[in-house]
Image (cartoon, rainbow, N blue to C red; front, side, top):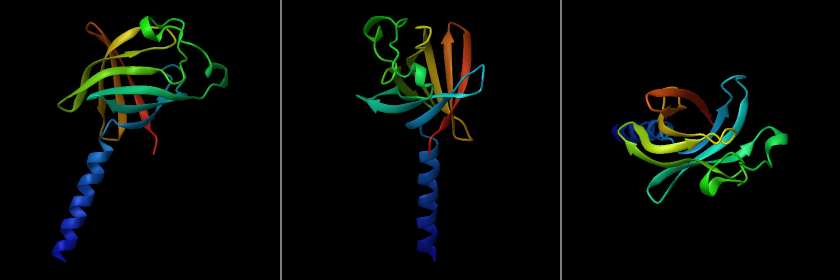
Length: 139
């Protein structure tokens, strides 16, 4: 009986740790309409965290290039674009990276965190000003 309890505790701990992880697929929500816009996959590469658009729900926007983006992202297809770049873990947050808004081309400093209800808090900063979105985990 004791062995079963230990196994159950280990299983519950591993599930809760996985649920609080930023990695995986997230549904982005439009700030103004509240409608789902896309799916972003958050992944690790070379010790840093990135996020790539893997699905765009609006059929008219699926094949558009990022004409307002700068640098290497200019004119690249939005579908497949890494919009989150160079994040590193700092306590319960992921920081020190950026996010680009492919519609405006604006780049923001970024902080990511998973909330208690397993949503991704995506907070973009310009100086002291910030805007926050909450993305839903795809299960």
